[in-house]
Amino acid sequence: MTRIPLIAGNWKMHKTAREGVEAVTALKPLVAAVEGVDIVVCPPFTALADVGRALAGSNIELGAQDMHWEPQGAYTGEISGPMLWDLGCTYVIVGHSERRRYFRETDDDVGRKAVAAFAHELLPIICVGETLGERDAGRTEEVIARQLRWGTAGLDPAVGDRLVVAYEPVWAIGTGRAATGAEANRVSGLIRGWLAERFGEGAQQTRMLYGGSVTPENIGEFITQPEIDGALVGGASLDPPAFAAIVGAAAGGG
Ligand code: PGA
Image (cartoon, rainbow, N blue to C red; front, top):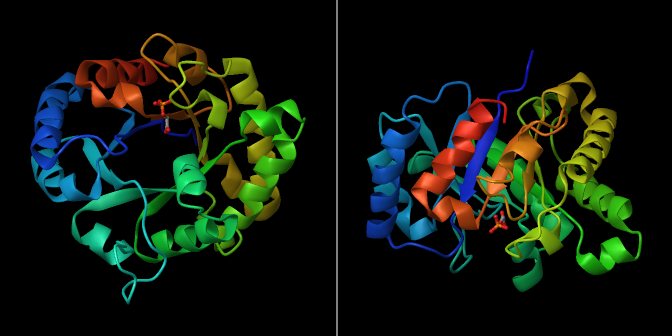
């Protein structure tokens, strides 16, 4: 069974609800004819309801950028899995490096969120990746292995085939300095190997995304790699024609 490519747009803290609806209204016709690619947009929480309505009947799915691990409770400012599910989300990003860095999310938090995502019928996109300092110190493999071990610690071994892992080197995010396809492929292969120890055969179906300065110009370099099944796109996902071009490249295999 071949893995279905996945292109996910992470809008981060961009676009009001109205701007989000405008963006997906522009995006829908640009990707309407695309088949064989799972397309996801992840707007801010405040735009999920309106963007979800605007996506109804389209081939674009709705995702969130984060979630809390508890279904409800006294957690001021937080959003739970059932709340996201209720709005029609099918995916949720967990452990993005900006969450880890600015909001002190730990590897353990990420693992709890991943478990909660599956518990509420959301597919987690678990983000891992090393900083420049860690890379320069030769610690890339060690850091990613640790993030992955904790990030998947509580998961049922049967979910490996539905899991999505995004390899996002922190130094490549928002910097215009993408990793090379060969290097991203190498790390993705390592990740799949580690996942196989935990999830067995299911790891062959885990989708591995690359993230970090993906553009219409460089997506081909990543999507053609054997271990890479798609991309988590930040900046370029804010522009519907650019995001559509990335989706189109994934549909064409690069
Ligand atoms: P970028 O962001 O494409 O703007 O580098 C990627 C991400 O943070 O997911």
